[in-house]
Image (cartoon, rainbow over all chains, first blue to last red; front, side):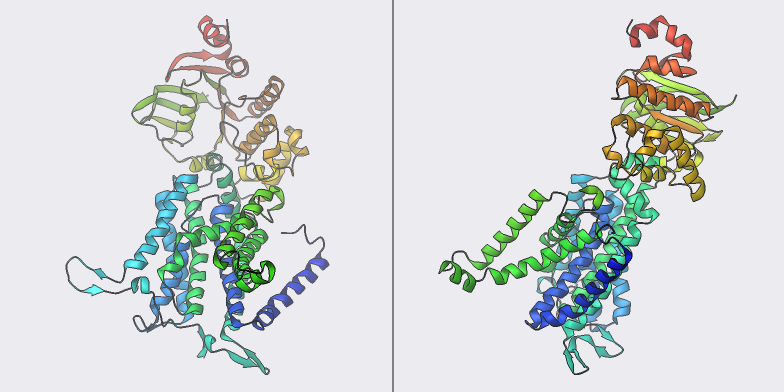
Length: 356
Length: 237
């Protein structure tokens, strides 16, 4: 992580400046509308997802195309146990750990059968796993047991779950927002700080893991599996650990997502979402935490910025007429940006120093 | 001397096709034994079975009096068997130093590990010069030196080397064998798998000749070197 911050004093100043920016950001952005705060919050969720996937793909070298499944497990755990669906209303300090735990279990369930697979084969199986989870969510509105005719509606199918509880601390409901020293703070802005806390926690967690004995073993596995075994590394265990840890991070992010949105549906957990998170990891710089964060920030904020930049009014002022439908133009610019980055920075925008 | 490694009637098969057809051999403590043979003779299959990478379909492997048949590779390291894999298998995006540290993965005595890394640097000065360099940027010969050094950091009683001369220039091969000889002289038992029969037999104490999954000749290395059958098949004349 060092190298850019040469000495301690400079790095302290940089860190302090970063902290100030991060604290002020939701208020600055909020001045342009709460929609932008929501985008900011999504960015933080993607930072968490990208960091979690980075452990699996970037550090351990296991290509996972179904990562969003764990995000879904976290989100549905929260949604089913804190909503009007079953009229259950558990607090966040049960739901977040539970979501993380269930996601980690899902990670082990995915990991166990794919232990012997690598590369493209692994990618295909994980892709299938991600789709299975999404399809389950989609179809678990009509569950019946073979010996009875009762039909249970668990996930409410494609209509999704509404009326999900937000986060609340000691009776204080985050969603309602608050007033502090005469300053109006919206619910979304409070969520921002909650998400920021968890994002920072993920950064610290991933960094420590990556530099631990386990982290070194993951890197060895990524470089050469047979040699890793010859070093005395129990490859099976560390593969499972990678899947479980990545999934755990995704599970927490999913719970936070459900809490903020108040609505989840299977649509949010498609293959495209997995691909996006993977793109964040690859574009940012696989295995390098600052790079992965940069990738997540860019790829989650860029489409929104383009959405505003490419709208009809802007086009009219430039060309005098609407040249391309805004939605099409947005995807076009976004895809082009990704292609250009990969062409000119194949190791990612901010790769780890040794990979340049 | 007692047998450190004893292989009895070992059989390895891939999908019903037998690659190793019941071979038996032994490596005594302090010896350097070589297993030579042409491409496809079953050298690597034998080593894969010994190092727990494939499960043998028959036979037993005894190490230090214990049955270790089918013990997974990561568990063998703790018993004192180190493998220097075919094609070197260095961790390309880790530095030379980190690679050596990985070799000591199963150990916890940090200070002693660092001392031993220094010993390796003393034995192979080339690695010391490149300590911070990424292993992937080393030349093939240097990578092989690193792979051997790394294997030694597991503090093995038995070092198994899979074709250490493969793809290297003659001068480099000589250097590699100097290192292997040094390791053997210092008391590590060595099982050397080699295609380069001449070189292997010149350096080893004893040898076994493997031909299509069976051992056809065995004995003192110098005697094998002089054997007309070995000469005709492997030494070009």
